[in-house]
Amino acid sequence: MKEPRDISLAVINRLPRYYRFLSDLLRHGRERISSKELSERMGITASQIRQDLNNFGGFGQQGYGYNIPMLRDELADILGLTASYKAIIIGAGNLGSALVNYNIFSRTGIELLAVFDISPDIIGSDLGGFVVRHAESAEAFCREHRVDIAALTVPRSEATSVAEKLDEAGVHGFWNFSNGEIPPLKNGALVHNVHLIDSLMTLCYKLVSEKKDG
Amino acid sequence: MKEPRDISLAVINRLPRYYRFLSDLLRHGRERISSKELSERMGITASQIRQDLNNFGGFGQQGYGYNIPMLRDELADILGLTASYKAIIIGAGNLGSALVNYNIFSRTGIELLAVFDISPDIIGSDLGGFVVRHAESAEAFCREHRVDIAALTVPRSEATSVAEKLDEAGVHGFWNFSNGEIPPLKNGALVHNVHLIDSLMTLCYKLVSEKKDG
DNA sequence: TAGATTGTTAATCGATTAACAATC
DNA sequence: TAGATTGTTAATCGATTAACAATC
Image (cartoon, rainbow over the protein chains, first blue to last red):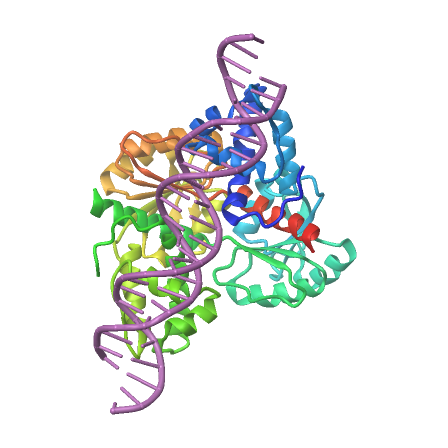
């Protein structure tokens, strides 16, 4: 594996999709695949696939193609799925519950350690095997357990203050589900947004523009 | 408003963010803004903002800038937020519940008509004011009410068959939350994916690559 | 060996940025 | 009017695609 420097965001955003397709092929018992066949399945060009992968190394073999289990493992490494990251969830509402119950973290190789909320009605109750803890204790928890990632499934009004506290407590990646954006954090923690409303608006745009253009 | 043809996906994906920032400015009582100030707030170039907006029309005024309420309304139109779309949700689990309880649809100008599920445990129960209906009845419901959009918060194994049925029933936009992808549909309905796992993997990649590069 | 398919360089295409005349 | 800021054209930059020699 090469030392990848300055990979473009366009490439990075395609990596999980490659990983998903390779996982599916593996599940179906496939052993090898050419960039050509993969390109047809994914609806992109074979050139792009080879260019993308060669940012990280030469994982294929002339005349053969790519070995699926091997390439999948390489992608897992590249994506950091083998980095044993530790995560918590702040906000045990419907979205936080979804992340727990659909095993989103474990399916990404991340260990979910705890779930926090601010509401007295929920604190102490069980959520998919986790006892919901008081949000006030999250900061100390992160310091003690060296938490890497925090999912913010809290209202927009609370997201920034929570992120600032946990940034101080050593969390270096935030997965933000709240509407609105979190300003740059002191310790430089990353913020990765899931803007559901933006996503739905994009769908609306496509529907409207399709109607016009036919 | 111009007749926009072949707007690039890069531009489209930025539109909801413009809309969000303008809404925030409006909430703070701001009346006008220049592309320069907006560019500083959003962390992009003023050139890009002007180029993006001018795909759709000349909404600004030399020497003045942009009128915020006016530009926001234009963007609402462009994004289809005023198109009175009708939607349903298939899958009343945690994710479906989140979409209902956080008012994701109404905040996008879309009317949520009904929620469906397959589980006898949930059918008939209340979810944020909606009585959960049997998923079998979704097809007929869509025909009768001319549903435009269906959110698919069902397991991956069911997503494709549900989409195929509802495509036949006239639904022309799917908001797919299931892992995995839905193949092209007969009637050409659009599929817009929210791949939470892909999103989390992207965050992981950034964390890993940051650690390396410093 | 002959055929297949990669890795990689070069060509093309598209998106972003810069510059500035137009004009409010 | 003078200053500010747009809309738009031109220049730059980056990403995608095509082509092909290398090689399994």
